Length: 253
Image (cartoon, rainbow, N blue to C red):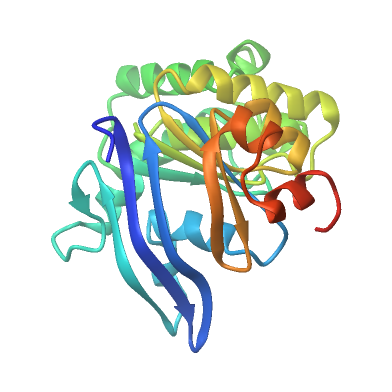
């Protein structure tokens, strides 16, 4: 166990009804790194992401065994409030989902719900979040225009800003570039590399090329199992397990 570990997952299994989708996962996520979870579809990647901030609680008939600790605290401890947890661990989904309101109000929405009402403070939060998401320069002169008018790539960075406005410590991203063009994808990837100086980032990538471009460390998931995890260099150039090598080289998946 590293003293730098932000999240520590031990012997974690997850079930939808009787279907087991994660099997005995042991994994440490270090503070301020980009950890990439990759592998073929139905490998359990999204389920693990959603388990990290307990979005899986919203699905009827689910259960888990094992533990997930955030800074030493079990996230499934009854004393851990879900609102607090989801502020600390924010999630960005594959499809951009801006609210049908202005760019400013999209980013200010969460802080307002949390009780921040002072206009000056909201303005500071919105600007900081938009700057951190590398979209400020593109939108600073139209903050009160409808967010739905933004391009797909801009909408996704706006959604990242919306999460950042809540002051999270961990960002979960589930294929955030799946519907974007190559230029927008590059913008998102560059944004993530800048954000890791302040945040722990866990990413399910769009493809293996993206995984190798942005990861500090990575884990290969197959049919609910964590096959292996390690540094990006080791995983993508010298995988220890033949299944990892076969997937990376395109022999299956």
